[in-house]
Image (cartoon, rainbow, N blue to C red; front, side, top):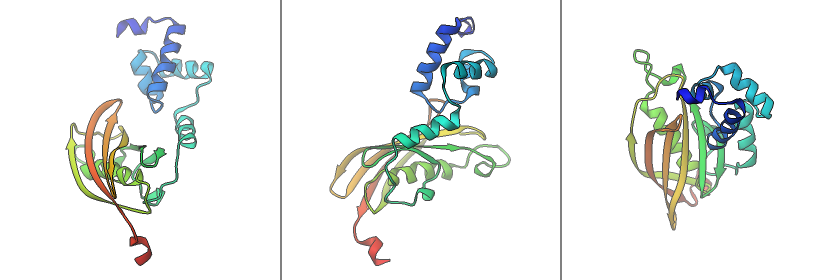
Length: 193
């Protein structure tokens, strides 16, 4: 890592662009730590390269690749949906705040991590009504206050009204949670209610 700190500016900026292409949700703090420079140096690099701040990058990604959610209200998806391609894939981001953690340990409550993945698995399905039939989940490591969960749902297979959706949730590129959901498209349910 110490070689990164002495990296020439042009090389650092080239790597910065590469890093943000791989993970557009990296914060200035994440990038400063990665390149072992100050946050101010990262901000100056971004300004020089014309790279917007995190909030603008998220908005830009969302505007380019968002299909309308059909199976849920967009406000029913846990986390901020930033990519949605129905029957293909979806991505959401959830920052773990005080209301998501146990007060004594500052560790995220598991049901929030599960809810982000589950709601994303349902949202990615192109149907007016979709419900989770089964879920196989695995918590890999605890998530702490302030960490940002990036969940990616991928529709692995579809057989009639049943879809298998795989969700991987990461923090700074590190896998923290995985789930495989069997989601069923329901017909006629919305009209009866």
